[in-house]
Length: 252
Length: 230
Image 1: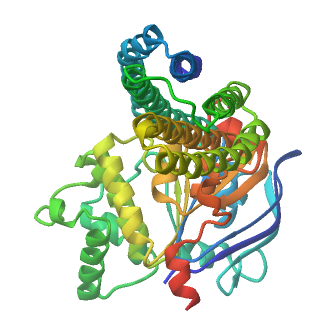
Image 2: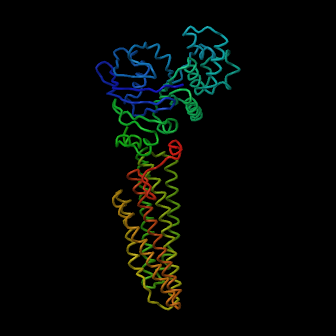
Image 3: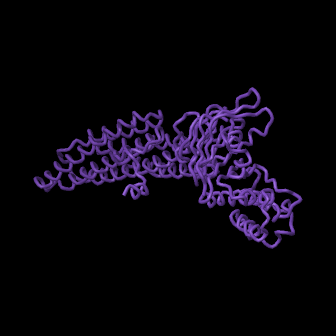
């Protein structure tokens, strides 16, 4: 099951430049929350703060409180522990190019010292089922490399890889921006299915995508959270003028 | 990209205003025709109906293209939805004007009769509602639209009064029954026009404020929430 994410007074910096200002947001469990906003507004920084990837950049730091279920992300929990609970999918599909499809999905398990082969088989199959890729690759699992798949299949492979370690939260940073509409449709359908088991946070530039897949939407501008509400409210009648100007293409 | 979209919205607005002008003119002409027993005006109303119908189709097409090609959001989306609905109401206003003109054409065949109803006064009120509803659209002002909603009750009362007095007249003077019936139907047509003006005003409020004020329902209740409350 997914867990809810509560963010309180989150600030983030790159060196002396502040990238996020006092973000407060509650993302409910087993729902998809979309993060929208113009380039450079802090969307990606925000999701990277959730799994403490932000701090992997030299000179970057963050403070504030992030709670993920019973975990306090910035207090008394190691970054590894956090990232094991949070799967992440990036803009460009990034399968391990020299590994087979099977090994790609099993990579996280192996890294965690998991050795039970029968159990691994099961998890690989289940993860590929969940990411709606199983039927397309089940006959070539151990023959083909991850890189031999199409872009859309690679992205679903990356989702399977993220799901294999049984996270509670799935962060997706522009997961469809490099995909054609058919692959995008499959990923969006997948997001819908995955909500039953995971909490999903999706960063997107595609407003229609946000409105299609997410129940909640947050609008960021210049490092600040301008508005957070139900998606239908944001896209039909937002409370903030700046949100309306952005989603109707009047700036940004 | 967006500027082309903005031009599309402007085009839609202009087209709806022209459509509004045609519908408003049709009602005014039909009422004038009633008061002056004027067949020329009746014919003008009938002839212009096809223009109104054509304008309705064109507006729907432009709105449909904007929805399909530009995926409008928020106030733009509300605007286009409002235009589509106002468009349908204006077309019906045109139909009501035609109905009135047809009553007038029937009426002039009959000897003039003294009837206890002030269609002229009702026509003035209704025409003011249509004008004000269109103004609220031009200006994008919800307050103007609100005023139209309040006028609707006045017109409803005029129609009710016309009904009572005209039925009594038919009873008292059966020889003018047909004339009284024509007047009664005209009163009903005018009341319908007022209803369409009310719808237009409600759509303007929806566009400007994002609030659905139809049927005096102030709070939208989600059916699933009702079952949860139980």
